[in-house]
Length: 279
Ligand SMILES: NC(=O)c1ccc[n+]([C@@H]2O[C@H](COP(=O)([O-])OP(=O)(O)OC[C@H]3O[C@@H](n4cnc5c(N)ncnc54)[C@H](OP(=O)(O)O)[C@@H]3O)[C@@H](O)[C@H]2O)c1
Image (cartoon, rainbow, N blue to C red):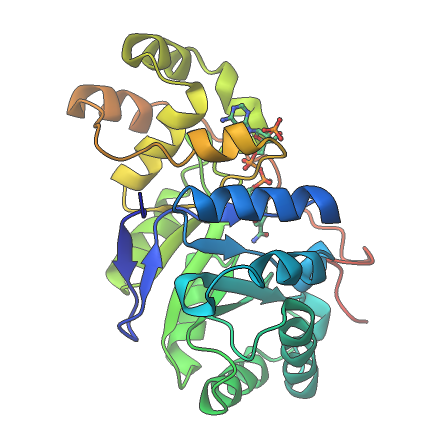
């Protein structure tokens, strides 16, 4: 069954569930993408920093391009104007396609002008290489600047989002500005499975903790990008529609109120090879 979608400012429809692909090797990522697309996800999330775009391209060759919503991301060290263009060209080449449905700034880079980055994004849209533009790991403050200076709509902010890290201020600002929220690490990299409220609700509904967490997120109008090495888990993570959480149970998860990020910690390693920034 195809997953429901949410509309972007361009009018394109973004499927509410996407295949997460971070940290998956070439063989595993191909199996995950196929399992997800066969289960109706219709949406794949990758990045130049994941070093798996070529393997994803191989898997996508078996599907109609227009049936897949394909996202990639440009690394923070590549946010200068020419580097954004070059990174996008290289991603398209590896993915075996001539356009991305969504291209995201993977992380903000305070050392490079955001105006320059977003001008490059607008050029990519003009050239038909990118259909929609977004950002990732942006605070409300950073997102407000992006909206202010961009010539193209900032359609999406992909942020760490799960019951232990709801980032209420960022999500509220996204709502006010018609920016779709995508949940990175929607399962909190399994840490949230231990939460007693999640476990109790999973038992009551005879669902897995993963399904309860993902269901809660999509009920909050957040697009989820679960990642799994197991095709069975990939399929189970799409079984989110045709059943609901009772409003009181949904509220119990909203009320967990714990602040425990799994990756978006305030102090960054600015020097790391992949996610660092240029000097
Ligand atoms: N923009 C960013 O900076 C950013 C940052 C982080 C993540 N992301 C995106 O978000 C995606 C997901 O995040 P993530 O990969 O960090 O972690 P995640 O999806 O929150 O958690 C992945 C973990 O959950 C387990 N899992 C998945 N489904 C399960 C199920 N049904 N039952 C039991 N365990 C299950 C997986 O184990 P098994 O393999 O055993 O199933 C894996 O250990 C990434 O792949 C990436 O696309 C983006």
